[in-house]
Image (cartoon, rainbow, N blue to C red):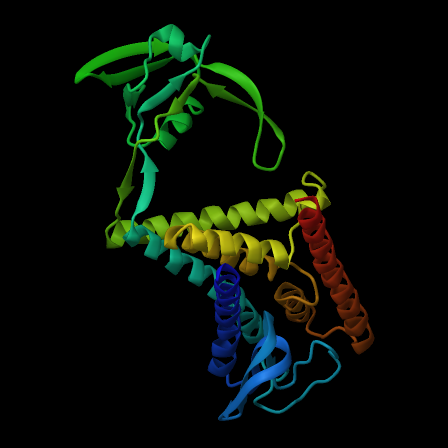
Length: 351
């Protein structure tokens, strides 16, 4: 069941991406010949107007084929008024950006839904106090509730680390213990650690862990929009940084996951509940949006680069150059997909 849900999630995200391209193309009067979800043998096809809508057997992708655009042969163009090629470069760029934009919008809507369903948050109650820690030396005890750090109100556990690492020197705490307020002062300890990308960092700690007490936070309409906006920005930045770290070698190539990993983790998220599924689906949606903006000729970003070149120089690249760069782009894209698949298989064998 989990795998079926995962495939459905991927199909929905791909549909939204292609719907973005389709909507922008039709807005500018471009004829869309085919709107396909999936590849391979067609399971269902229906022609509506001039567009052939279809579902194919392999639901791991999709495409919108516009009149005058053929990724397999960029020399096949059409000068008709309703063709992609007849439109101005800035119009083509909007059509190309519409796909990734739809993915970002989808993530935003999912985060907004999460904000209304309720976001689980750990409360700032102390669980374990480590031995020989600044917290123990200052007198912090299990079940103490941290109310303030240097005068800043602490609502959730995540706020504790934020404040400790934005303040230099000693910190002043106000805690609640058995309905009494107590003031404490302590000196955080600096340790060597790693960030999410495995890079060495230093951070300050006081030596406590959460008790596990939590609450569910429900956002109003305006606060929900703000939450969705911030979460979409954070997810986008995370994916951009991940790509950068991968390209610069900070993140090893064997960490790259393929379609098997995506399906597997999505299936696990679906079994963990609707919130986990929404969170992970939003992250995949942002992932699709960011990756499609990479300047690889086989992707939207590559086509955007061609159109920017035309806008700047006033002329298009030669057919020979277009064909060569497109072939290189496809080779790079297929190589990345094969690397992801290889890593997936290695994890399955190892696991």
